[in-house]
Image (cartoon, rainbow, N blue to C red):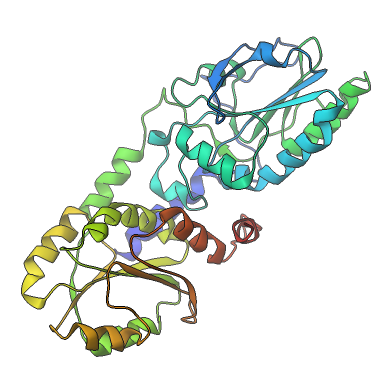
Length: 376
């Protein structure tokens, strides 16, 4: 992959969530709900397997509806604040409901660089279970009917309604607490609107940029180089300066073939954040054409190596004497070559992705991500 292409992809990823201070501009085609407007009704599937509607929360004195998603780093960092809000106010007559407005087919792979799952309902269920989210988390990415009614600008975006279900505040999560406190005390909300910072809503009324991204990925060159003992010893030392995943595989290995597409998706998710993937085929040298054909079919533009000799054990020992002979075998190496994660057999992809996220250093735009993913 060229530096130019990588730079473009990284730039695109940052542009999608670059409104941290200035706020995300409202979409003219989807105006945000006006202060004083009635709460829109909705009927949406939740991570609990049930369908939830507005009437379900009629007994609450205050209703807070937050548009939240899985992939946006601002949403991820807001999760603890939402959990605290729910814990602190659920016994005070406040109902908190989260709605994911995004369809996963409208989110590029390079926009998944801070997450372990996509924005599908299945991904939401995984996130809720892993992070122990107990407030309702609903999916609106299929039609965006509720999202359109609310005019959710970005994720996260909070709408706070009084007991008569009139909108009294909309904007950032932090300021929502003051609005909730005012409404619980039957006072006027001092600041009714604040700019929203986060990732702009992925409106399905607009063309998805995912196909263009995939076209560029599919056009990237696929190379295959020989893995000599010297090359493998150097590989184990990780001279990339990045977090490096090394995956040993073979074309005759069923689990290797099964996990390869997810391995490629993982590479494409994180490569803009100091992560690299090297695959090492343990096929005999005469199987090179079959290995190349498979890699090209997978559009594997990462670094690819192929055993240079039939002396499999010698080559494996050159990489790491502790390495077992079976494939697949995967090793996640820190820039200093320390082992951060390893797995013999087919990868548990979620565990791998969480290990990657826990070891990628924070960037200036989203401090706290490494700490988030380092927690169980």
